[in-house]
Image (cartoon, rainbow, N blue to C red; front, top):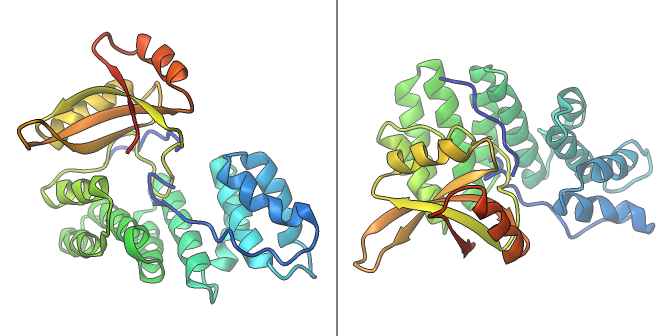
Length: 270
């Protein structure tokens, strides 16, 4: 299958929408706790610097969590070697959340490098450790890797398992259903990456099928991260809206809209 265009969003998922363990830095110094907040704010260079210092300390209680954040930050900076350096040791961590997030990120790296067998192994391990929608995303991406290997039956089983684990993400449900129907990931979709944050987005259209929405999304993939969202029209029918970018203010979204399409509209993210 073609190499995915990489646009950064958690990974919408991962990874795969990953959740961080924000609750517990034991180091009394302020900078020891800052790496979680910095990562959540997408300040990846700063979060990497802060987390790697803690991860490299022999005396830090939260070294494994710091190593996870250092690895995820390095991945977001496209520093693959550094990402692997921190993620590989914690992929087998006793904490299932740390192990699951690290494994999902390693799966995403392997997938991007077209090492699909390794990717499927990491994603399946991540799915066994994570819970809810995070686990569903991991199994969905495992299915993508298995299908890329030509292991169709195993891919279908992974997609079905993903569908059974979804809790409340209608978009994720639609993506899994599309894969079971023979579809694939959006060209701009990066396994394990969260979609960028922001209250406003630009909606370019709404379509009757996921396939049509994907074709629309491909037109704007070079401009910003896109996603396909199931919505209901006034008659109660399901449509698939294409949303481009995330913006902190309506003014920023409207400025972007003017360069995208005359028929596009600014809307809030649900």
